[in-house]
Figure 1 (cartoon, rainbow, N blue to C red):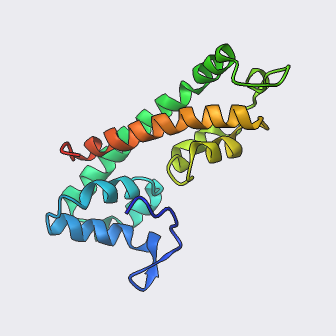
Figure 2: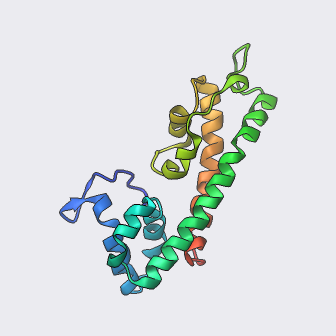
Length: 168
């Protein structure tokens, strides 16, 4: 479910993003534990106002788990984003940039707070770097993108536990 990264692709006669909450509700009611982790994770990316406006479509306990997990997940993502400058410093020490004036010395962050909302919508860390950082060379983009992918993978794996899915 998480492998298909296009919310506008067709699914069940509608678009994929319109199915997330319905599928979560159905999986929760059916106690289909194998489906719950990726569905919680996917639904946690919706804006709070959307979740509240559609809260009646979910059983109350399912909604409680989703909102608590969403908060925990966002806290971890914010913490990891705040460590991004440390990763840039490590890149400078490792001399990943081939330019005389390393890109990572003068990189400008643009709207990093939006990574919290889009952290998993982009296909790769390099795509996030291209969107939220000033122009960097391919070497720096690859390095920083790789670092972002490492923590995205860790968050993705550990994130399931925020929704009570400890067996994943």
